[in-house]
Image 1 (spheres, rainbow, N blue to C red):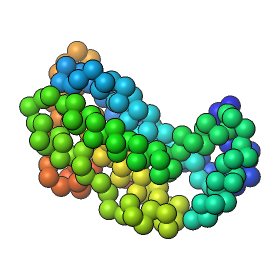
Image 2 (image 1 turned 135 degrees about the vertical axis):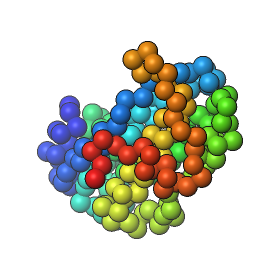
Image 3 (image 1 turned 45 degrees about the horizontal axis):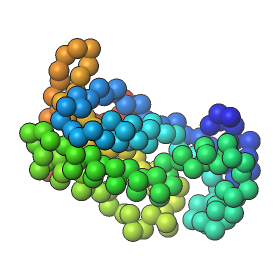
Length: 180
């Protein structure tokens, strides 16, 4: 089953493709052993498409609909980055990644991991478009986290800039390829 097959289900109104990010090849020597699995989780999150349904803020109806899905559809639907569990999990993974970082800019990297877009407390009442914007901010921050450290690309070492104190500055430095 492909992600587009979800459009055959009632209540699924659109599949909005994920942002296109510049590939990141990480030098894991700056981290403890668990880093590659954490980075895989983060990369999966930032590359996941948005699954848009017609429930808006009716979470009880969404849960009931989700429970009616077959196993394959449920797995795809559960991968939706708009689900609170998914972006909260990535937030937790970012904190673990920062605590595992052993490089030169430890304090800046840990500070970056503690950042969070404004609006988490109100997430459940946001419209779908607002939720997409909010999660897109999480994706920018997650991409900044994995782009911050020394990276390997085509055999050349590249270094990302030292973290800036402003979340907005980080987002502007690491915009996806298809951002306006």
